[in-house]
Image (cartoon, rainbow, N blue to C red; front, side, top):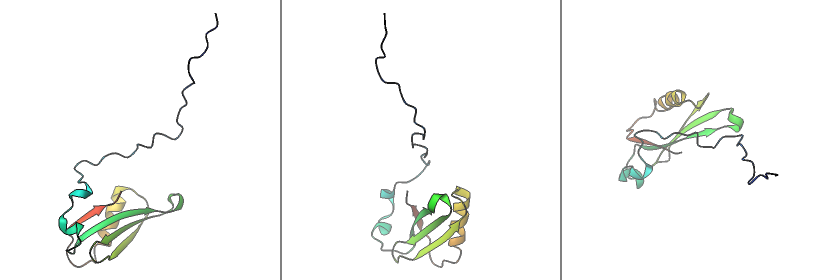
Length: 106
């Protein structure tokens, strides 16, 4: 008696599932930021983002003050959290005025 296959062979994904990012414990959603940051009524609310170069050759961390649009950038060698934190501290060293909060874009 001949047994035929009932379904196709399952294929293995070569590149992973894409769910490699982990959730950050204690993270606040962007909807919970202060009202003064939403309507841009006060100075000191910053929004930050990282920019990756072509093929991961370089990285930038950018910080924009939400009321004035003032931009602060710092070049990073890699995207590790320690490097990003050090770059952010270096970028804010010469900034006068209040630093109320920073919202990270993902």
